[in-house]
Length: 117
Image (tube, helix red, strand yellow):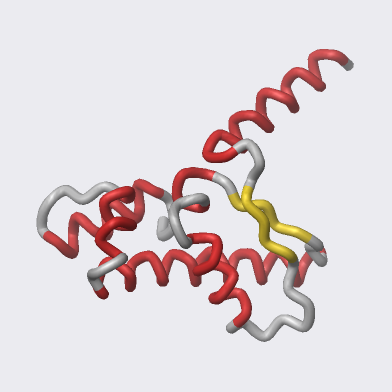
């Protein structure tokens, strides 16, 4: 609802009054405060979700993937937002090695593993 590519595009389109893709939004954020504000809000939402999961299951590491998570500067924005939250020991953030298709790769591997058993 807040941090997906579709959600970012929807928010940017509403703000600018014309179709704006999430990729275009990230490009605009380099020089446009309104675009940066949308992305910063998304990063804060992801950080809050990570914080909630961390409080429940004591995460050691969070791997971020997807086109938005791996967009230029997003991992750093999430890390900065996470550091602003009251956590005693925040989990390590890292980029998915499989890039934007990490989730799909994981689902395929899980399906293959289930079919073997």
